[in-house]
Length: 306
Image (spheres, rainbow, N blue to C red):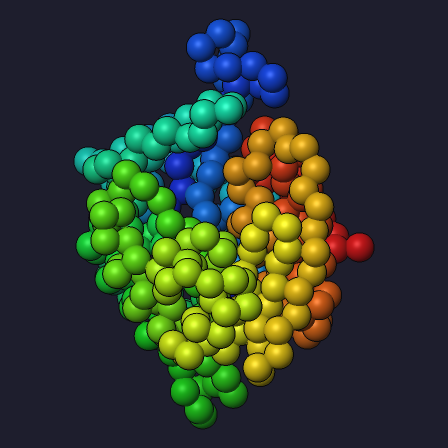
């Protein structure tokens, strides 16, 4: 079966206190998993798509838990056969603290050694779409190279009628191997992707100041055919020279982390099914809002776009 999407990136064990509590005084912590690419995979799987997630995890209980959680999304929904287990490096960890943010413990993790060779047997050229984010580009030199390899492993006629749609979200983060050069390191991905899904602030950091439409047009000049820009009050998309914009209202969130990944899943799902950009913006906004209602990056993701 041809994959609807193949994603490459790190997933960590995620710990968080129950809603309304703090790590410092909670009697127990909720155990979950989180990673930009795998979060999007979960969303697409719940909407009926067949996806594959490529990564490295430690040969530890945390890695076991992540693999089993992704498999539990349903038979054949998230293929994890290309997840390598590392005997010498651990699975990464993130701890959520309400009101403060997230602390990552991922230096030296198994995923920081993802390399181009991890894609050797993956049927990338046969996929409908491929996804990588700036997190992968910033966690180490080898993951950065692997991400670019994902974007260049494209099929050509007569093998395929169309090469995979290359999807990129800059997802800029501090405190990673490449964070001090993050704009420089993610630009090659922007230049080679087909669909760019980005926050307005991070796109301004990468390409220079401007409003959402100006940023989208500046990005378009570098190569992407379709650009989505998310901001606090609206989400806009540029395709074939036409700018469309959807005003949004952000309700109070139990946990806003993961909303961007959920938006990406809803948007990509709609576009892969042939939906319009306007429909995709609406679907992405609904999925992003749904995820913020739970202390989890994925548990609130819907199983339909209706």
